[in-house]
Length: 114
Length: 115
Image (cartoon, rainbow over all chains, first blue to last red):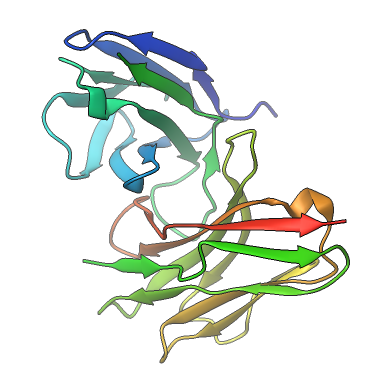
């Protein structure tokens, strides 16, 4: 069974640009969550999608958005990039929303804003 | 809001020995789940062990076990017979039953297993 696939692995963008990151969950998993990981703030929840609907949202500005497609693949978009958006972005998938299921993470996308 | 605290930024242990990583959390919820994840240099977060708050029995997965003290809001991870491959950043995480799949993570503990 293939794991959670995140693309691209690395990305360098300039301030003011926008970026789209992709996450393909494990086959059969319908919930996808996104996290931002930085040395200063640690791991912070961005949002969760389940059955193409956003179910939860963390405390991030509106520049951060996402969506989920009918095949459960998810994308997150960051517009008007700032230097502080440089981070490792991780996505995690699970079969159901909530429950005691462990979440399977991808290897992340390392975004650098210059 | 829930908070998770890992008070040990770094720890080291000799190969084959036992080490315990600490985690405390703060919540007013009664039903929740606790997790330990490891993040090696490959960056992928890997689930180590999970615990449901309503279960009194401590979870065990091979060399990994937890000491869950609900009243004290403590959730420590014990690694027995440490191996070099256990070297990683370890994160404690909390999820309340009503928050969907949203996890709240601690700051992490960097564990180094020395040969």
